[in-house]
Length: 435
Image (tube, rainbow, N blue to C red):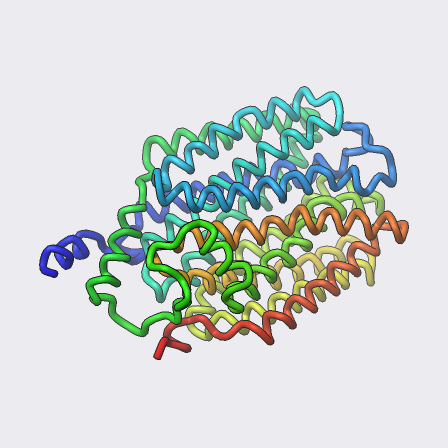
């Protein structure tokens, strides 16, 4: 016992005690957001004129988001398990290596098929990199800082998405759409890879240290309500089954994560096209979509910390319903000011739910398999891009317009929030500790 306690004492936990590495990881996720955001404004808006997508081909238009969702979801799953074997830093760097061809593929794309292929690589990049920035921060911090930790992570990432959407709109106007995306994307990807090699430290030893602390009985504070029907070191399928249906709390969180990505799929593709057809310029579209990203990103700085105080369940349920209301408001009015307001409502709803769904999973996932649990939750969540894009394309095709996709998404968010309200208990260990 004395040797085990000595090993446990080697690692300190908390944002302040690990501030340098925490800050490096925040920079990393900002660059991840830039890489994702460079495809959010220019590519969908110019799909018809620049990349040859026929007008009204909603399913073809959504094809690149379908590819992104299925690939990123799968890579989230892989990244979580892989990081428990080779470490967080190596998985992060692999993600940046995969991203290098993306700007060149967009530059030379002769057809929409090339954009879909580039988005497949983007899905691999995002699945490996964003998963690792979140997991690494959770390794370093304490249980009472998880909401704040994920809030800061998602704030930094989606602030990057918003910045990229605005900047690429201006770069496309100044240099041309393809050239502007090449300049922006290559700068972000190369900077991220270099920073990973030079300054990022692997945090897997912190996760091992936390598990040893639990084994030694030296963890202070209330004990989380960990699932009881799982092995101490479970296999991949056992964790997958637990997250997907065996534990109703984890299943409710996973389905909420999947459905909320319907909103992001809508904003990624239908929103720019909707605004472009309404007469907004690329820069104007960038600003409206940017309002959604900025409110979502900045508000998470507060909403993640809020859930450390009042719990996870209320912000998650409120966020699902508020975000759905913002989607419905989009088609109930017109004009750049109205659309900016509805985008802000959507962003605030996302800020309430997005970090706190992840925090809820982290609350009740044991450190021995937390990386896998986060990866599987993110698998289901980002699968929502693909499933949402397919459903949105189908709904718009059947009903003959983009507006039907907005109403479908709003309804799905309300029903998913109701499921979360009925079947997921509070997960914060201070507010609902294990007996």
